[in-house]
Image (cartoon, rainbow, N blue to C red; front, side, top):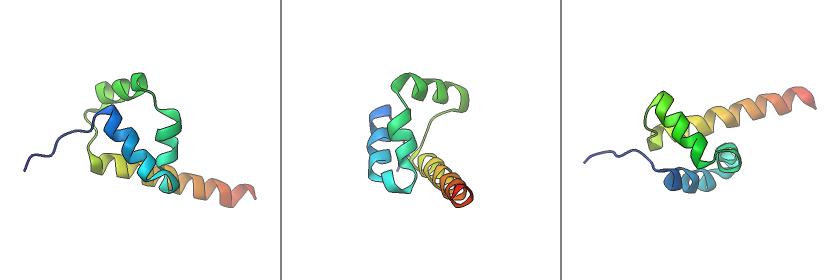
Amino acid sequence: MTIKPLTYEELISLALEYYEKGGDGVYECWDEKYFNEYVETFGPIYKSNALAIFEYDYEIRKDFEATIW
């Protein structure tokens, strides 16, 4: 079984699926140009990479919200 990198459309779909768990940042802010720049700079995005991005964003937001209220 070969693991293939996500396309922009697949990433956005996954981000929507994980919207409440950190995917909102990618869903709301990433356009195809940013996706292509990210891939060019850091390499392909696989599902595991995307989930790590979502989790990181979610943890940052939780920490931020805990300190501003």
